[in-house]
Amino acid sequence: MAAANAAYYGRKNPFDDFITAPEISQMFGELIAAWEIAVIRSMPAYEQIALVELGPGRGTLMADMLRVIRRVAPDIYQKCHVIFVETSQRLRQIQKEAIADHTELSVGWYNTIDETPNQPMIIVANEFLDALPIRQFVKIGSDQWVERYVDQEQIIQIPIETLPKAPIFQRPVQNGDVVEVCEVGQDIVKNLAKRLCHDGGAALFIDYGYASSVWGDTMQAIANGEKTSPFVHPGEADLTAHIDFLALKEIVISTDAQAFGIQTQGEFLKQLGLIIRAKMLAAHASMEQQQQLSEAVYRLSDPSEMGDLFKVLAIAHPDIPPPPAFELKKEEQ
Image: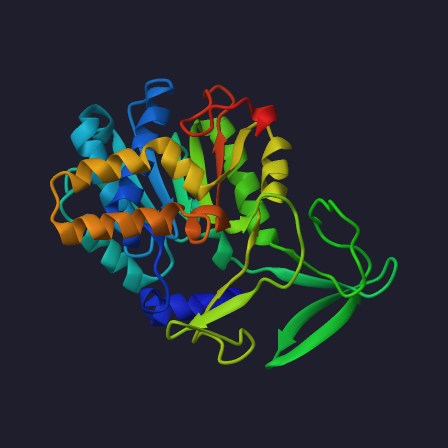
């Protein structure tokens, strides 16, 4: 999965196959920027703070966030160091063009988050975790498991003794059930939580997945805008899998960092002011633009669209108060 997705993002334009929230409407990035500003205001004063995006795509989200921060919080804007974590050279050029009018800011590109400088960070990862490689395990007996993988377009199953970093089972696992474990994603989240404890800051993860650990085969492939088999033509399709947000939250809690959520995207955006922002934009818009705004609100927040399927998890330094849309006490979330 990792090699296939690397080839896919390196050679193809993934946005021919799917559309992400920042591409649906500028409101998404504007609201995330408001969230970032509020979090930074709650932090100690720093000479510089890094705005980091993991898997930044076209750079649309960062461009929208920077536009709002420059206008609403120029004091914060002047302290920003922009960081893109991106491996594709082709996408790096597109991202550079997206923020071309922010020449006063320092901008850096890195292949991994581990390579970035140690400094206070505000991290946003929208539809980043879902593209990371997973391992699939199938229960075949009372205490027996096999790992399922693909070798030369053939499905192979090999026996294993125990599940690595298994999710939290909330109901009995039956024979034939498939359990997916994203070790890479778990490691990234755990390391980020530790860094935020040391360097200061917060992170926001937005992706489709589950608020409670479930199981089943969620891996899917999209090519030419349609679902296809994930087992053929490596590098020609975008491979994704649902995120076990509860497992990630438990990993954060095991560190000294704070975990806020798990929130649905619809509720998260509404609490940040999605409806109000849409009405403000509609007040000076044409009928066609008003219809587009209405459709964007629906796609971003309605339970039948992205509203419930996408979840939001925030991670923060121990001293940061609950951020916007996560004001409930941690034990109540």
